[in-house]
Length: 158
Length: 158
Length: 158
Length: 158
Image (cartoon, rainbow over all chains, first blue to last red):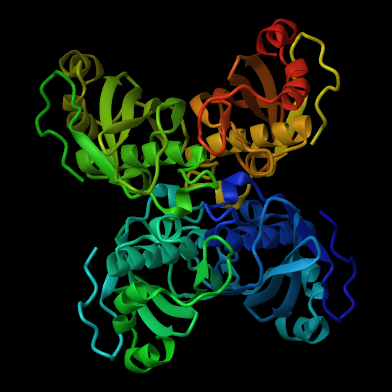
């Protein structure tokens, strides 16, 4: 797993790539990864992004910090089949940071071929009540620089 | 599983509902079905639609008939959490039938609450080559009446 | 899902059968259900047994009643491939009820052919502490009659 | 993934360890990896063993070489809960190589605590017919040195 760009440029952050080893277990009788597995690969990449950027994966973010980021929308275009023959490089690109929401693009590539492109919207909630909340300052400070509109958002959300 | 409307009215077919028993196994530490399971519930409902309407589920459609229907796009809005407390009623609504593609809406409801709404686009391919193809006449005759634009499509595709 | 034998005979209870619809999603490139799915089918059948016998599935047993039944052992012999062509009839047979443990056999059959036979051992714990505990009397009263040594166990455990 | 011991000593090979990153997606409401996921972690480790030792994972062994290794038995003792807090180190130990079968132990450890210990038996079959077969000489030559009884087996099976 390559680390994300440190710092953040205000121009977005396409640098985080999470490699997935696709396996026999993921494949259906068509000898390709089952469609229902693809969203799971993308979600795994976003979970890995949290761990790399904030230092907490979803499990520890929820249990140790009390924040969860449930999904409110996903859309995925499936561009070419995914197989175990090559690593699936899942690139996570933060797109937008709202007051209580966060949007990512995730693209999957194998052997320099685009396999899927998706967008995912999550909201911040407190684990205890599942009510929307702003991210706490220390987490916000870590994620905000990775968004293209980081400067303006930081003004808005802090 | 309720059977689909027989016949088809030319006005679409929202009658097919596939019940899913959500289980502990589907749930994450937030005590709700994991986001990555939801697309799988919707896909299962579409697989069940094929079995009910054509008499072949995806497995037998692919292996016995030589046709597969890989997905090229999915989009899902997650409206409220899914839990094991109620049956998840997945309604499959055929939306459009193209020359070599098919589009469905799938909505999930629990306890009269909307949980998700998604749209899914598949293409027809031959299992052997994975190349796009029109559905064979006997399968087309079974699925076409379930689409709102069935009459015009039937002219176009046969 | 056929209901379990009501009453309990003191001679065991092989009457509970949980049907599983195996799907394309469960199958691997060998065109059979992936090995890693089989334990999940058996576990689903045990979850269904709890719901049928006690009125609580694992989710509600854990969250509403405060009891969980984590597994300490499983063993499965895979006898013949599982496919989507036939319903997988999973028969759950209670084998032994200890002070804080419970043992089941689960067999899977398709088209009158044995597909797998497994044994599973769970312990009773409180959800809050995950410490072993005896089942509370009202739950014990519901499950005990389904075990072959029900009479003696009831003496021992109440 | 640490590479297996090269060479093989005739005394078995406990050196192959496949790390699994357990995730939120793997966990159930008890905040631990769901029981049904554990066999899948062990199977993934065995798949990784094939790739490391033979140069083919299950997918390519089946599709490119025409051999599959379906499971005929698994048994697992669950010793302590698995969580996302630590890497799950899955050690694969070849135990016995028969004429047409192969037996492995897989143990899972997190944070120097044993989480599970399992044994798994597979048979060699040709993908085309699913009939038992001896492994072909080049594959046998690669796997045989990793078994404790490698010398005698090699006499028997070649």
